[in-house]
Image (cartoon, rainbow, N blue to C red; front, side, top):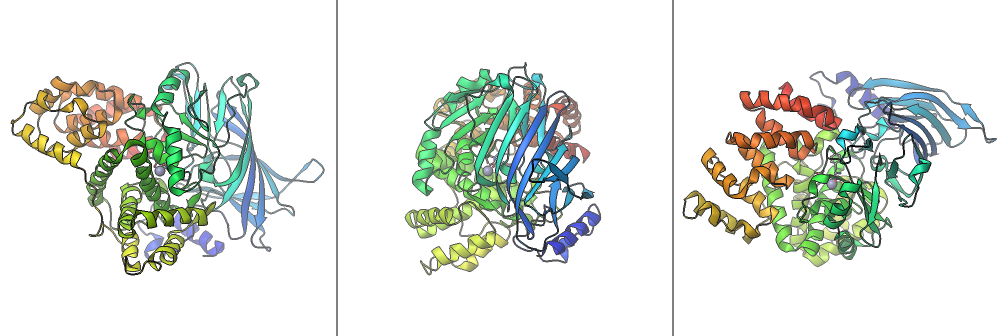
Length: 624
Ligand code: BES
Ligand code: ZN
């Protein structure tokens, strides 16, 4: 679609936003068109940005200067359209070649609740634009934390979360994954705190200068530009890896993630060299709304996976795997999200298999499959396609189990059909072929057809592939994950429910986190209060430190009105902001009038500590 047509469409969306009419019922979706950006990328694309940011912890603002270099794709282009949200533009100019800046003309488009606001700039004669701006304290891509919300309780903290379309709330740019740019940055902080970015981070930089320099020489999409500022320390955990964390968590994190180098090696052995030189982990405060975020060279990680026994480290395998699937080969639009998340979930499981064994891999596959099967009936048919039609919809809502687990099942199915050796070679060549490019679902399908399907005829048909991608549900030929370990648990559960074995006879001593999760997740509907009492008396699950097991235990507690767990659940809900762990609890609590009132009181206390993404989701639960 021409950018003018796209602008018309987006304008139409803005006018129809909130009305019952949706544009996409009449128009066909166009592959490769980003419906979530105003940028006129057919005319002009950014190639490099140089950021100069002053971090103001007193006012919760960033005063920024973004010096953009760009290249014309259309020699007749007259303007550049950037994405912004809640930014105050102070001035826009272009270098005059003698050290000065001459102003250029610009204006803002109409505000849109979901997309923000277009910034339309007249293109100067050269290839540079300099924008001076100020962020709002409500910037959706930034969370400003008080000292109380950190582990130290002493210093404030700031972090960004740009995926999917929040980079525009702290940097004016072409906020679309189909544009890749290199970046450099100078970050000035008004306190003795350390800034880190999705770039090389020098552990030797001295905090007292309050100024940090960064350089990301590899071209990345805007959603991977990331920044965090806090009282951070560094500890090396491998030849090219380390953890960044607040002091109290540093040793714990270094221990928990000490297998990171093994994971990188496993990834390289499968699909080719790790292309980003260093791989560090940043442990965030517990309000971080995700498990992890694959910011290049510096994955952002929730502290809720610090279980003490390395049992939740698949999250690291996942974020690391994005170094290939996502960061190297990037989804062109949010419709193609499964190319990022499905490939990564598949790749994650392959790394887990090498580092933690096939049993762990299989158990995690079954747990994810059960989540998928539970979620599918709640989704509309069109939301069950791998290639999603997200027009008029916030891409933040696209993160269901579909792109992740249906995507992964699709790749499991291909692996099974062609055999591991052939399939691995194909995936490796795919990453190599599309390295540092942003691609659509259709680019992948064509590559798959030419390089795998046609080379091994009569193995799978293109029609079957298209069914996976463009139809709802799970095709019948899917390879359903399975493990003996869980069959054994099914048997034990049966015996225990029949009272053939006593609670303290359950062989839980050697149960892994995954076995506990499976056991508790698969309690029958008619499970009751007495059994909760008995389990708790024997295993003290109400006080369990493992956040994933606690989550399932609290869900059961709500369903069976096991009030003894509520006080601990209250602390949990106030302490943790990770959406996956808290949203299902609020949802379940809201189903019953008494619990609903209780949950609303807890939420009132917890809400100010949550990231805006979590706030939006949970507000919706209580609006219903
Ligand atoms: N890229 C995602 C995080 C994300 C999701 C950002 C939605 C913006 C919107 C990240 O790689 C991810 O998938 N995280 C998962 C972890 C996982 C092991 C499935 C998460 O946070 O739960
Ligand atoms: Zn992911």
